[in-house]
Length: 526
Image: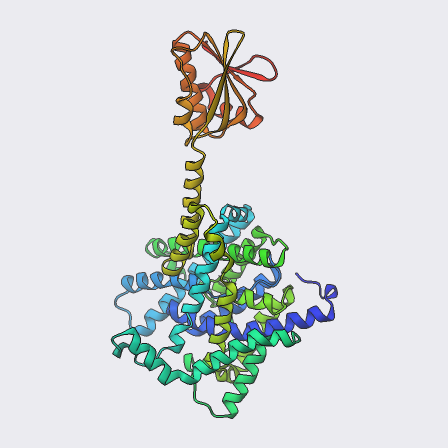
């Protein structure tokens, strides 16, 4: 929760103004993502309000904006297709209602999964995402944000055009006014902050351009052209239908809920990491997991779809001066007030203004420094960056991040799959001084270092500069012990660290040793 007494007048003003800008920007996004999911725009707007409100109060990062998102909406597309296949006899209206109930129940279960992940403090695993993967995520998402604006600029009846050149020509001739408004909006956001930062540049662009278009009777696409926002009421409690708890329905809902939960958490925690870097203050990943889970479960109970953090709107809020919880709280509250009480005003906003704002968000989100760094990165890191970017654009955020982690882990394992040994003779004993980690990747290299047949009767392996990392390493030691045992020779393990001892203890009877003195361990032949 936020304490208003801790705010200065300047912070209150910045948070309220930036929250107002974000509230307006949330409307078309929520509507568009509802269309993607195949439900009424009201479902996305309710979700944006409820999730945004709860994460504003309980979230792990002040000022981070959450709501209905495209990454989660895309998951609901496959859910809708599965529902259509299950109920082929339903008409369009009944099928739409059925899909809605499946989405609501999926949102509730996904929220409960996210709460469990947060309670178990698993949010820290976002630290496993390497920096190149984070760059790839940010760059890919920036491109996705920009590409998502193109349909608003497309000509009507686009299917009648056979080539991209014809589509572009038709778009310019039909929507040239939109292009002018987009350019004006982007120029306002670029240059106005250099003159004054008293009011967010995006909010100025929305107000001024909307007034000019409205009173100048300029023909252009508006938010009202996307959806009918008349007669919108406040969200109300919806009891989940008990009939959905059949085994057949749960076989669809449970896997989808798990995917929604993971996609939502990954995008939220990565957005938190991006804002951490921008602001220098670290947020709480586990707290964000719980807040998002509560938000999604509540959204499903009140007629809204699940969502997660929105990096575009979060960056808008951050760069507009909204650094506190009051900004995200203001955005959520103003969103529902605008939709319920001032739907006519929202409907009059030109889409081109919002497109221009999102284009600037895309530019601000893209990590241009990564382009310069890529030539100086190790080839493996550069490969991860490019791969995650491409997968984020064409496939799925969760798949992209997981792929980046796996590739980075494999590269790390490959690069550390060697262990070095320096040998010496002391009092008739041969000393093998190891250097490097002993784990599944370096077992082969480890085995190649020893000459069991020609070694003297006593051999010492010194682990002062090496560590036993996993059970594969312990098993390798056990196998080597057996070889020396069969040759009638004694093998001593020296300078094992506490975690190494624990690893060997975990191996149990398969890798035995006894105490020689406080700094020695012996793998012996009993």
